[in-house]
Length: 250
Length: 290
Image (cartoon, rainbow over all chains, first blue to last red; front, side):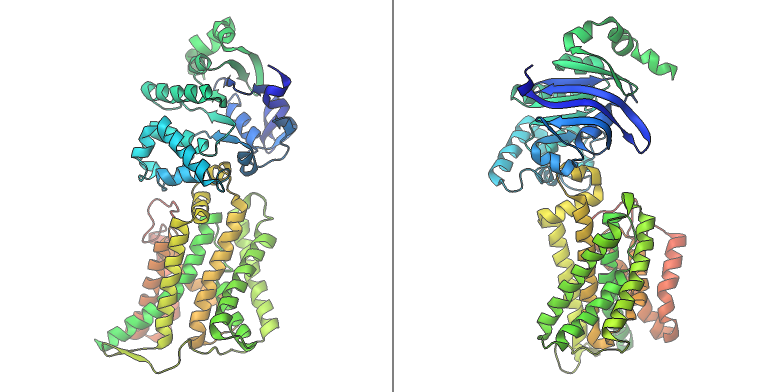
């Protein structure tokens, strides 16, 4: 990984809500074209990490740099213009609005002045998730969970991002739907899109990612190529094999 | 029968005005989750500024447009100076600030335009028209036409324009709107400007019948608020429904019970709705749908 190829770099990032710190010095890089997964149990700070990157949560110390430039106190509405799109936890769709309105709004910041590019982006989203074209006139809140997740991904893609951030895309979905969504992510990645994925299902995430970071209580406790993490004994015990038992303890 | 028709006409006339003011409450509520108690003052400013611009020698249509534009600008500046600095956009604090703002706007109008009631020419001169035996003032037709126009324009804005969709998106899911590039704070400013413009249209339309005065805002604020609550604060359609219904209730109360009770109707409606059906007549889940 060359320095020039680094798209996103976090250096000692501390962040949280008000005085409650959630992240305690996160170092993380994502190179152009990579699919990077952040795994960890519920409450490890994975979602806060993504929110801190886009500016929905304040960074109290450390830097977040995108394309080599610190984003500082950048706000999400500006970052999306620079090619950074987040598929948020819980999807946060515009429920009463139609599927096509949701997608059109996805292009609001980035593609507003480029109609042709927006039409192309829409065609690509429809090719990726044909069901969104079938349901174009339906209110987003009437879609199934899987379709809603597809719409959330599609809406983010409408801004034609260089870096796509995804927060728990598999949450609450049936295995068949999860497979469909991750197949789409593989396809996007093959097309050159850089992806940073936060996922509780560690095995699923690592199977699709190039590299992974393991988070625990706001810190990165382990990082490396996905294959190494999948083979790592401590990861296997805690996150791949017996993690459910750990969950039962709480 | 003629009597009833006359009451219905009067009710729908006042109801249209309440509907416009209620729309203003609904729009700001959707954007901020707060009640803008300065909404009535935008109604007052519409009439006062209309008289002011007409007094400068502008033809009435131009004076009307200038008054609406100026009131919208005042609404936007009010948001920028008083509402935006509120940390975290806490609705309760916004409500307090708008109460203070209403007093400020009222006193400024008093000092700039004086304490007198100021007349504004009717939009079209001439005797009342006859409708199935009842008399309809020409200005009433203007009120209905302007209310209808404002509602259609608002619906087109929300449904057909990118800007309007961004406003709706912000009220539905603020963080997600920001994530797609919508400047959520600008949308709040826009909502105040839009609410002010609607209030101004109402103030202008009714000024030839009632005269403009610095003190009419508070009373209209209560009526518009009651109409918005009656409708359920949920959608523009609910606001219009609440406004028309309140106007009819007032008119029928004045006609068949006692005109003295007319102004009490809004307060009774407000209390009954808040006690019995706080989500309003047309409110479902308590969720705002623009």
